[in-house]
Amino acid sequence: MATKKDRKATERVRAMQAQQATAERRRRTLIVGTVVVAVIAAVVGIGIAVQSSRTGPTSGKAPAGVTSDNGVLRDGKTAPVQVVVYEDFQCPTCKAFEEAVGPTLAKDVSDGRIQLEYRTVAFLDRASTTNYSSRALATAACALDSGGPAVFTALHDLLFASQPAEGSAGLTDGQLADLAAKAGASKQAVVNCQRAGTYDGWVARVTDDASKAGITGTPTYFVDGKQVTFSNSEDPKVTLTTLIDAAAAQQ
Amino acid sequence: MQQASGRWLAWLGVIVRLVVGGVWIVAGVIKLPDPAESVRAVRAYQLLPEAMVHAVGYGLPFLEIAVGLLLVTGLGARIAASVSAVLFVLFIIGIGSAWARGLRIDCGCFGGGGFDADATGKYPWEIARDLGLLAGSLLLVRWPHTRLSLDGWLLGPSSESGVASGD
Image (cartoon, rainbow over all chains, first blue to last red; front, side, top):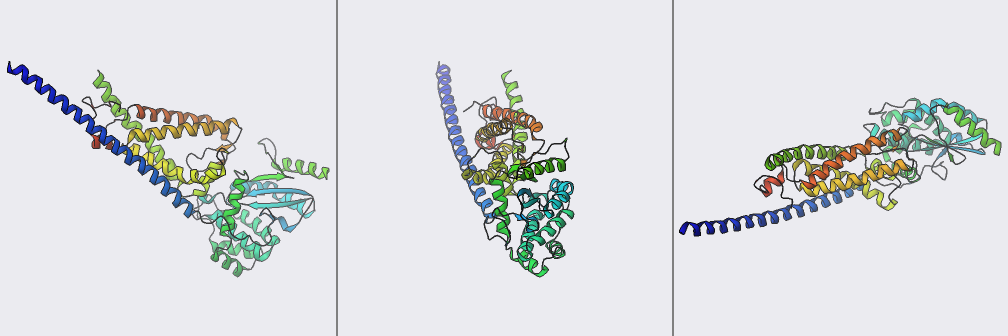
């Protein structure tokens, strides 16, 4: 008799214990969940703040001698047909294009057929261990400011000819200054300019501007404002000269 | 029978947590060194207004790492898996829309980003990969109670069979 009663009592206690355990579990789940959500939000918020402080200013004064689009005209020459190229000194495809079409375009510039505007950007800082892309462009800006577009042009060609391998440390600032001197710039002026970081903000700004303008990669060529589409089946030199001839005929 | 399948699920969940969480951690960490590149990768999709591009480019890698760490350790697994699933859906939409619009961009999933001449051939694989990871995330949303998890340690076993009651 008593055993039946006892069993019932035990069952009631067990049920209550189970209920308490479930409630306790629910309470802990709620606490863990709240903490997890708060931590995620905090990590993301702090991350955004850290990364924006790390990127530095995307403003800063431009070097003397740039166009209104922050480009540089090859040898400072203007002509009716306008060719624009977005390039990165660290970009291997840009180097390949410089080798393939550079001499032809340079001749067209000296013949007065086209003007060639270099809009150099620093997309590929991660391709070196030392932000070579940005450093090379900053040096080119320093050389432009002290030596003018002809010096920039010579340095531009030298930089592509001596492009470091991807994943390397690239040229040092000293080696870059030597190249600038070889191109005709005052080495001391360039070194001072590098050390002061005079055009670091400008480099970040032109890179950001290019990205905002929809430039997603380098090189990107334009002939009279129209983006050039290269195909694998056609020599890029033929593609470009055809477009340039057509643009010249329209003048 | 139910217990056996529950045990099997609880261990499968551990593997899924490690795989999906591991992918998130790698994807996030790779993007940290160059925040400007991360912003450009976001911009290249041409989906978000300029005002949001920086926050997403800077914040997304941290969200990825946070979700990855939570999944790997099994802390707040259901919440982390839900965020993971939502992100994969958004990525699949992003890549699919880039593909549909004829953009040729690197997805920027593991750093990089921007123009990629071979992008069109890669989109299907990227979407397939994200679908697989989405499936894993949804599995964890449905059955978040797995072995070797901080949740299990903090909350205790959820039921006598050791499987989620699903609360």
